[in-house]
Length: 514
Image 1 (cartoon, rainbow, N blue to C red):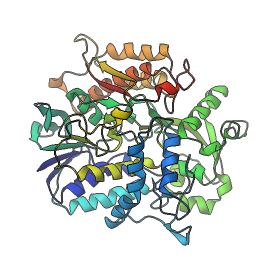
Image 2 (image 1 turned 45 degrees about the vertical axis):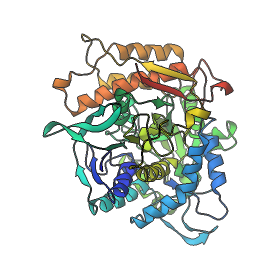
Image 3 (image 1 turned 180 degrees about the vertical axis):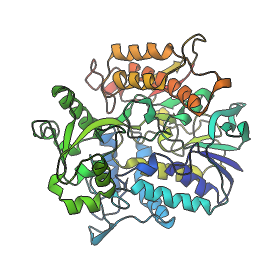
Image 4 (image 1 turned 120 degrees about the vertical axis):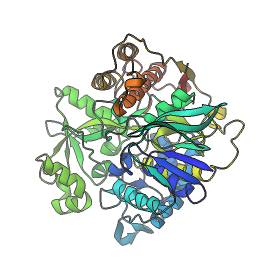
């Protein structure tokens, strides 16, 4: 069977490695192999490995962070299968940091992060977890029979009789079509929708846009997580939540801690709570960033536990051990995406989606810290196990049987032919200002009108970035439509004009093209 995997983060690499044992696999990546959000992930991967921890507690923490919107079967699958999938990574050569003395029944050095009831975060090289995982999987893939196409952009899914049968691609060789029995989208998120993001340049939401145009159902698009602590410098370098997990605190320009007054978990409250608290504090001090104070942790500990972060700070003239560093929220992770079942199957036969590109309900309205690498791993494993099985008649979308959509939106993806071509910076500014951490009806409508007044570049004139900009424009429209439709505040979606959470709205909003 011919299987095409799109994307080379942890979800794509793992799917390709597993599938290559039984199928003819082609992995397509628009950059070099391994360039992805995964490679830059610092904090680690959450899984139950200690005897004083349990799957039930991991499930409870995930559901709590998800703000009432998690799909419990997906959460159960995520947390139950986590330890097994972790062992698979070890088998593929990932060397997680070990504890000098085994504590609480775990051989690993375990970190604590926001909204976790236990220290259960495994890491590699202190703060180089993503790179450690990515490098090991790249080497494993290279030893397999999988074919790899680098610097190749998928421009469209090929659909025949309501089934995905291949992809159209653009490379230095021009445009061509590749046939497949199965296409697995593992192309990551869309951090480039926003002016400030912790994501690398490749994160333009290509997979979600491909599925949208092909007619797939999308879900939970309004929930975009903003990481509370990006270094307040050009490039928004991520300062891992693990730094706060080890004891660093947030202070304002008066040197005062402020999170203790707002949430019992203080700096380790769910990410949406901390991010909005920082935003409010910044507004109260004229837009100045708040400071993250890790000086109490000691220079030796910081250099050993966070070597990458310490080095990045030094490159900007900052010393993490000697002075508080300026931080600000930045777009980090998309909970929404291509709606799938618990095996990664989408609403279109032949099309799977795994990792950040997918929405299976395991994250709800706000992802629990360090569950992202775990989700990519677990659901890539689950998807690869059913690639050759018949597509379910109801496409396996059990989530919507018990959790029917609150709204089912259809969004027009047409554009005026005489409109100006979209400018990425202007789009990112609209998204940051009006569809960001805090939203209201007026701002959302302003953004929607701006997106309707632009058009993508004509296909005959497109280069790589023009295809990406076309994807970003489509996604900006559907994210804004979903944010307008959810007239409440929940998790990562905060409405200034609807600040309360409505229990009747604890259901997904789905989107498809009109």
